[in-house]
Length: 158
Image: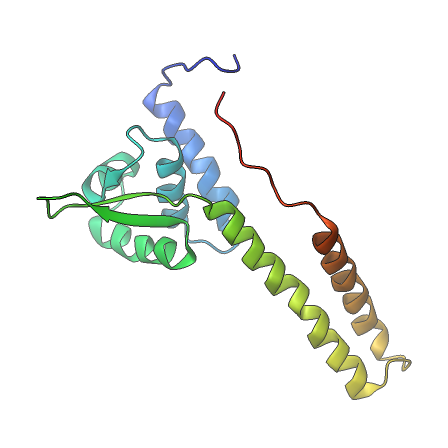
């Protein structure tokens, strides 16, 4: 059913939100933050207040506040206010996924330097350096793959 929007059952939506949360939890994101992000990816309207999000995912306002701070800091979510209102609204930040992936790539490929320093410390040809050489080799390969990769093209709505 590509290109055709269907009205999903609220329980189906929450199951999908939970799948997003569990996927992101494997990378260290707290479950509530994953649920918030999952909800903001699929909700309508795309901007939601803390109260709307809290009610939708069944999280306390305190848990929501803490986890929203995590998502704001990571660049996944942005916060907006509307003229004449005191309520803040949250939405998935445009380009968030690319920013997050680029930051992770930078972090991963930076370990190549750490591994190189380890080999320099104990000698690159020593038996002890074999484990470090393997890490250096993999992270060097990753850096080359990402350096050679074409930038993503913006997703188009269908």
